[in-house]
Length: 332
Ligand code: A2P
Image (cartoon, rainbow, N blue to C red; front, side):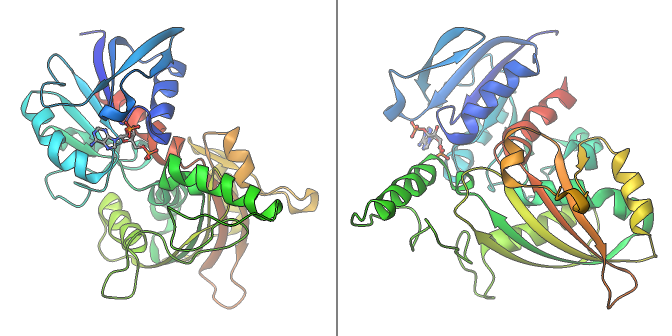
């Protein structure tokens, strides 16, 4: 087969729209592209290869003749429809958290564990956005010297929550600057000109689900349960691009110079680390580059095997849509 019928579930959403763009940019061999969303989107069209494609309503018959389905419509939709699609013979690449920790479902970042794709039984999970960029940045370190411990703090853009959150940051910023009454629908607190140490639901252990995703998903993707990981996930008033401050303790010593040389040769990574010229990764740069950007690389002065770094990636692209399309490319 040289061309494939592909469906995008959640095509009208922030990630779904990126999926459409990326399939076109990367010239994915598509016979038919089917765009699916809820009833609310009936009548909408989305441009693909200069054609306006009509958005259709998702239903149980949507997967007839579909080879690959990219899901990004939330966990509830994936839980209900991904097994139906897989039963139909469609290969599902699911961007929600519904199946990520299922032992029968591979969780894949092509730069890190591409071979795991082969183990799929119809569903492949796309990891959480903050996990994807962290494992891409840390895999070369893991391979070279091993990692004992990771401490990560994230600074995540509102687009990770979806289109409604992008609208909320825009509206609140305008309301505050124009002395108007503040409205709030998506987050439990004002997000404009604020920082929320809270992403997703709280669990009984005091961590949020987002923090626990970073911990569990990283171990699964690395196939390593021994790495010690702790995380703090924070929402910041940025539209696009997740930033992360990562501290790691390696098993063996590695110099910063050697690590920089490794990063310079690694696919999917862009080293942006020239402090003399104020060059370091910025959230705004993620709208230009698809690579995971790494900078502020420095030794921990208090621990010989400790390393600090600052990483940034586009959460909608490498953190979601691009990673999903790269998985689809592995399949073909
Ligand atoms: P719709 O636009 O019709 O609501 P985001 O994460 O940016 O909010 O996007 C969520 C995506 O998931 C949208 O495309 C949305 O479609 C889609 N979606 C949400 N609920 C459903 C549903 N029950 N069935 C199909 N698509 C859904």
